[in-house]
Length: 409
Image 1 (cartoon, one colour):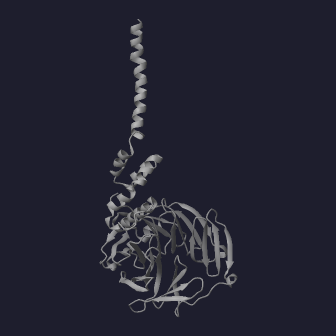
Image 2: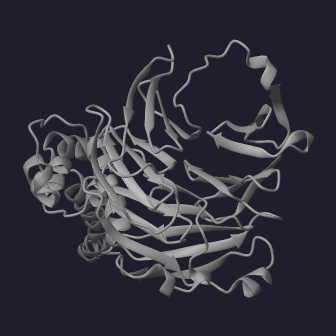
């Protein structure tokens, strides 16, 4: 009986204990028992930066192996051999930034796209800004509207005091700043009430400078305290923000064409412009020389824009309603896009804030614009760039967000 009882205990209790030990041992072999060389070999076989990032977040030892073995860097160079430079001591954060910029530019250049459209204003919206996942639209109906760039849902509304009409606006994570013909207004992002208004007479100590002998049509600010201003004569002046000293003038090789839009790329020191005759221009700020000038549209280009940090793509839009993605370095038009939208009478019947998904149609850059139905290409009065997103306004009461995906997704 004792033997039998012993066998019973041996046959029940001991095996259960062994199964428990075995389960713990299996867990240790999975997460802890593999040495650094083995883990390094496993991680080096991963072919996706985001898989590596997930592994590096598991524990400190895995993070140390991935970082000290420079696996992020090696995978980036494996995918981008032309990006290999002389510097090898670049942080993982920098590689993620490069990866993000590469994916962003690739999405704009080759990825599939779709548009989301909704009526956002009672009358019209002619300007838009997009930053940190939020979109701000307005000018035309004396209110500003804040939207989510991801869901396109309404977030907040800001009323312009004294029934003034806005001229321009901008925003950051804390505040909204609007400019009327005589006032500067500031709102907190979290509430619609204006917290500050100032009339133009209060700025009598400001610095005045003369950029051109002809009217100034648009302005841009650089990160090194320079003001860049376009004119109706087709020239672009550069001045110092602090002293007001005029430092140089950029000129076009073509007949005088009014400059209607400007943007500046900090990383490459390039200034981009769009003109009244449909030309896109690029100058090197360091040499003040033109790098390229291309006529990409038969009509006015109202907006030239790129994502900060992106040195590959430039997006332009204007009166012909075609969204064009261009190469910053050469001025080549990479792709032209329009939206398969309803005709105006059908679009007007939609309820406010009803979000509609629209297919995006790619057209030949050499195609005659007049052959494209006007309802597919309403004029683009303003555009702004986010990560794999473009928001456009069209001088109507609707807003449109174009979303791009990597070609492989």
